Image 1 (cartoon, rainbow over the protein chains, first blue to last red):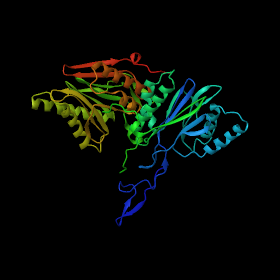
Image 2: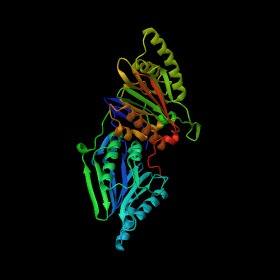
Image 3: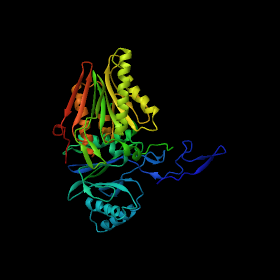
Image 4: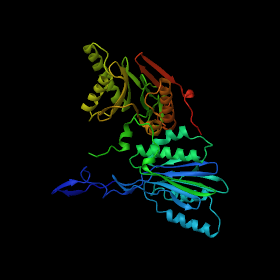
Length: 230
Length: 217
């Protein structure tokens, strides 16, 4: 979404809107540059995201909730380059399951997202993480990257800030972590990404989903994990 | 002129590489991967050494256009040895970094090259300097560069501690390079590391099969 250069009058002179003096937040679109992460553990999943939404250089919302509830035990988070209007469709399709009084499978939710992302892969660009718990396969994390592929992974990161924490994630994730270790790993990785990525920041929102339900928590700015800085 | 250098503009001429330098207690480690690729599709060399010696205890790693970087380093080496003869003493690390900076800044319109300079001198001990693409010079404790560096920012932020021992720092550098090589398709091969201390210079090469493995799925 390239902003067309236009002229703005400032102090009687015409000045290009690409000049540093002209604020960009009145012509940039809302973007959810972000960092999102999900980890499976034995018995459930942990899903987390930062909380910053930007319009150009202006932070439109610094406490966004990017964890979207799809169903009782299925959550998703999105990193969006072009807005996705299909969410409401996905949620309506889930109404169908609720009527049959049968909890949906996480894989089904992920597949519905994948179908939308793949069908409209030319127009929209979104990376989605779907995480949840169901009776059949326990805790699962599904990754639907740009283009519309679907793959299940024990741990997945996404969004603009994710590139900075691939190394950290590769070195710190081991199979067989418990819920608290997963929460700590997610909080640390999100905190590191938020420190390096300009489009990610604010607070860390976490949700842990298991058979017993969903537990949500927020880690505020002054409680973020700190690392020895240099 | 656009306010930001967009990622794609810089990546277009970025050497597919991962370079890093880190200070430990008593010295500095500088290292890189060893892959040279053409367009991200063909690996033209698996064992290229990207750590260049510019003086006895001063080494450089290059980022950006390889051709520009080689030309700048060649010129800098001759300036530095002349300077060292004039001063009748080994050059300071900041002298080497400043020479690179002058070349990069004065010719910023034609060049696309950045450098990591690491070394030891008698005045300030171990130092690491970064000369960025436009010719800014800053001193840092630890720094990473190249296309593979984006993947290890989190790891370096989390794991680097000031005043590590030589072994800890070597392990940290090897791990960081291995993680970057694992995610970046234009970084790979062996890890070339150089340890510079008051006593001298040591080259450490970690071949591909000896690199640390992290949950390779």
